[in-house]
Amino acid sequence: MEDKGNIIVPIIGYVITLIIPIIGLLYGAALFFFKKDVELYQKHGRFIIYFSIVIFVISTILKLTVFK
Image 1 (tube, one colour):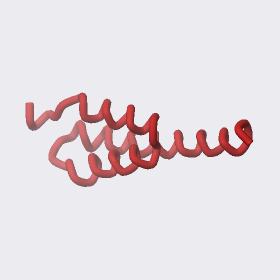
Image 2 (cartoon, rainbow, N blue to C red):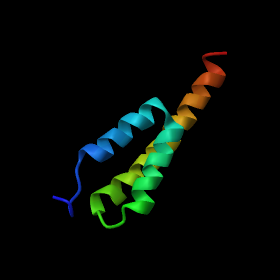
Image 3 (cartoon, one colour):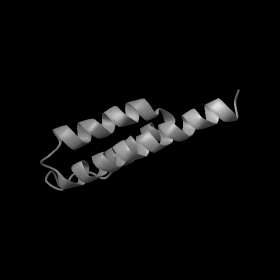
């Protein structure tokens, strides 16, 4: 199980990204750059980075337009 990784770690990253995108970006970067031995973490780390950037941009646009 150690070589394949645990699916709960990326799920926590996605939840953190929805709540606080900047922390999610750091979490995804840590998975992507520091967990290179586990393919699951590296793949989802990249997706968490993308997801956090998208969520950050959407939340910034909403803050500037809707919630003036």
